[in-house]
Image 1: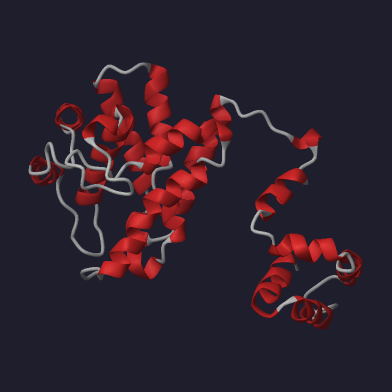
Image 2: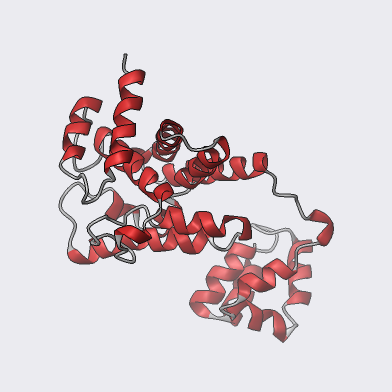
Length: 260
């Protein structure tokens, strides 16, 4: 019922939302719920809040204190994995992508001698790196041919959206910056900020290598699947431009062990 109220209020205004709910009483909606809504609807502040750009803050204020949940490491891992699965379900071509990038990124981090805590943190960021794709049309993400300039700009927005979405969770503030930068390049031609090499953190470089490896090796609308060996050959041409040389070398060592 709340969904119908929002859709009709957004598209046609308050009277249309009220009319639609009343018409569906006893058919779609429980009459007791409709009666409760009619009481709420008499409050002008309800409708003002519904149209307020800061409605997210109003929703947060409604959360009962007794239902606050401690965000420990296990719960953060569950959140990262769940969000990754939601993003990957957006397209059949990205099924398992976030999980694989998280898997590769953690192995690369371990190979580079990072601490267990850092490796786990990088895996979380990798699992969440594409969450911004939820804001990009599937028709663009699944387009088999060359993207138009407007379509490519729409795809580029997913990196910025990833950072914006994750930054809304206080515990993910730093992770949001790292995950949202996974399309930055060492030659300064990346997006969304065209960062210089000095501003691209090692954690991001690791995720970028893992992401590129999976994007090339897995089947996509615009190319067939590639073997690990051929994928590494393709990636070699990107060294020092899009790909960090040390992270690439770590990936090579990881794959050499895994493919034996």
